[in-house]
Length: 124
Image (cartoon, rainbow, N blue to C red; front, side, top):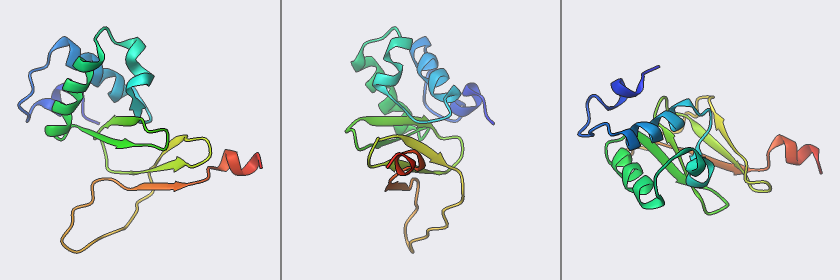
């Protein structure tokens, strides 16, 4: 697994303390995080966070997607994988099984699968 310096070495990003803080949190997480999930761990305002996240997305370092709760979730691009979003509890899980979906003429970066998670099914 790459470290943060390796991750940005081939980009146009200057590694500031704010950027390092965001990347460290995302890098160490085992699941995608929203701004609300990490805002208390950062000493920066919302605008600074989103400006840096936007730069990471431009440089292809961070993936993002919107969940059922209308929040945007972010994760460092370490390895390609799908996400399962529960339509009942909005829990997000990383799915590391290969999703062999191909579309001629397209490059697929992210696959979102929606349904009901095991916990919600068991609680019914």
